[in-house]
Image 1 (spheres, rainbow over the protein chains, first blue to last red):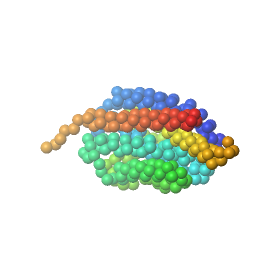
Image 2 (cartoon, rainbow over the protein chains, first blue to last red; image 1 turned 90 degrees about the vertical axis):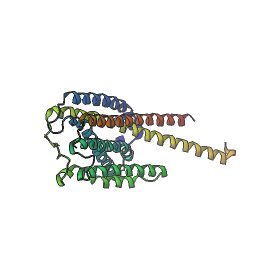
Image 3 (cartoon, rainbow over the protein chains, first blue to last red; image 1 turned 180 degrees about the vertical axis):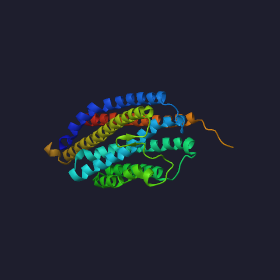
Image 4 (cartoon, chains in turn brown, green; image 1 turned 60 degrees about the vertical axis):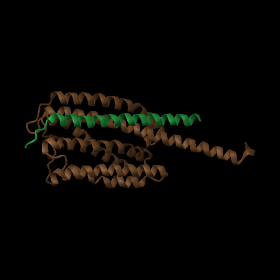
Length: 249
Length: 46
């Protein structure tokens, strides 16, 4: 694992993967959405609004998956002190927050015609909202730590503690009464008809590829900024040193 | 009076929010990356 700890080596890999992930993600997502839109018949209970499933579920999956990735990266940072772990966690935070927000927004829009309300304070919706607030707190904390040049260990602890919310979101519809339906896809089983399931899995794949591309792009941006800043600082120190000892020049 | 809702209006709204949000995130992240890498190249030349 430490073989990839070298930023130069990582950048070589990231340069190779970023564009294929972004372009591939866009193509697969567009094709999967068109497939789902064209092939899915109106649902018996939800009618045409069932089409929202193809954007809502990938957003939910990536919102929760994003924090799981932050928790894993935080653990790797705290235990193995992998230098890229903090950068990867920071890079995941913004796309994770965006997808958590998109999950809440599309779910709220879906709730109005199917439940008769935009919002209810039940376990699933509230725990998802808490996840969005955790993301916002994490982004603010990591930005502040980066600005101050402080250690990212506090953010890593925050990332690990916040992970407790992920299984709560997952099990909320089982533990508490909710307007939200119970889990439709479990390990090795699905209650969703194949006519919706296959395009849905393709949508999840497409959005996940895009998410991966965005994370690589953000990691490259963080690394490039750090390298530029370090280089400018070194040059400024050299110039200061040269000014202080003009006779040596 | 019972209101009648056109389901497709909600579908269009959900798709618009999700697609605009995803595309904006993608374009923004890519542009940020290009700008940061340009700054790094400039710092190398200075």
